[in-house]
Image (cartoon, rainbow, N blue to C red; front, top):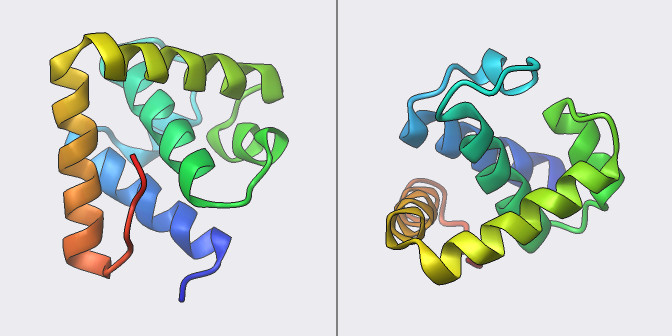
Length: 107
């Protein structure tokens, strides 16, 4: 069984790989596509699949505070309801994680 830090690393790596984002760019203060969406997916999946609190997730992603994580998760919930493209991206990332690590991801 993976601990929270290991789960975070698996989710982070899978998201960056699938979205074709340089992992170093995640913590930079940039809004170039697709970096913001990648950050939001990471925050959403990490919150759903670990016991990390908002503050911990914000720190890992390089955000100023926990409210950014809360906002990202709210946005992701809306995207998952109304944007089929984002739904497919999250499903694909979850499948990659499950297939490569045996970690069952909650979407």
